[in-house]
Image 1 (cartoon, one colour):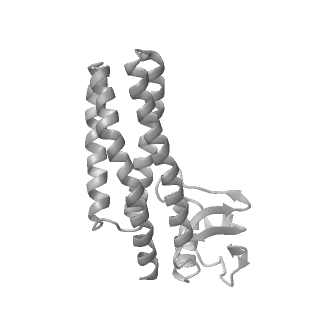
Image 2: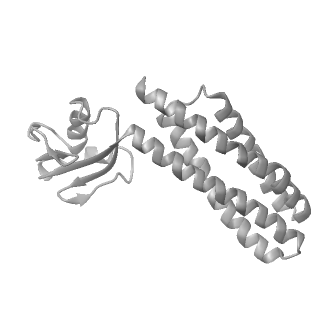
Length: 201
């Protein structure tokens, strides 16, 4: 039995060698057109690949039931851009807080908050990377320029941290990192428009 988004399909699982062949067939049948798969359940248990093409190693005879859950690309895009706005606010607030703490000579607390800022910034870059590859945004100049600026600044900040120059770090965060982060509010708005065009096109 193959179920896609709560609807049982007429696809028969016999005649396939492995799980990957079944998943490819479901995709070919246009059940997932303009949709992104969020969850796969094999025999009522959540399945996600630990290594590439792991689904090839699961014999089709072992698959008694297959359920695929997906969302429209537009919904996924809006969800990601909503999340990105929250992350931008966290980065903005975190950078200002780190700069303030270093200027008050609260070094140990500043370094703790800085570590959180690093984690949040890495998450942001990762989400941006997903958007860029999923929605083919390589020609979106403002997006690419802002991403390059943030990447360069992040590398520069890591060097300053190694040298333990906290005043320079505070200046970098407040006067370069925060403005670079704030540019993303406008870009996320443009991104929503770009993603809508992508889906409609």
